[in-house]
Image (cartoon, rainbow, N blue to C red):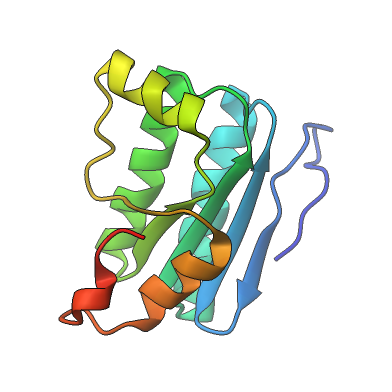
Length: 134
């Protein structure tokens, strides 16, 4: 699924399918309406496509606030309920420091340094030791 604009004209975040994985690339700020739409798009795409993983690439995000942290955690929680694992890829050091300072642990989310590493993490079986954060 690749949406550019919603009917109201609000920018949409593309949700792309790569085999058994959905790839979401966040660029810049994610506003309330776009965040809600993204959560709905991801859940619908998981069910429709029967994917087993979700990769959220945040390498284009300069700042993560508590709102975006909550959105990422909610996407992961929804995906988990629909039997898909979520990995956040491309976190910048400043973003990681900010998340720690805000006290956001993003429980349920695995992280990877790159999209490629995230895909490898999801390809590993749940019991595989390679599933550890890369």
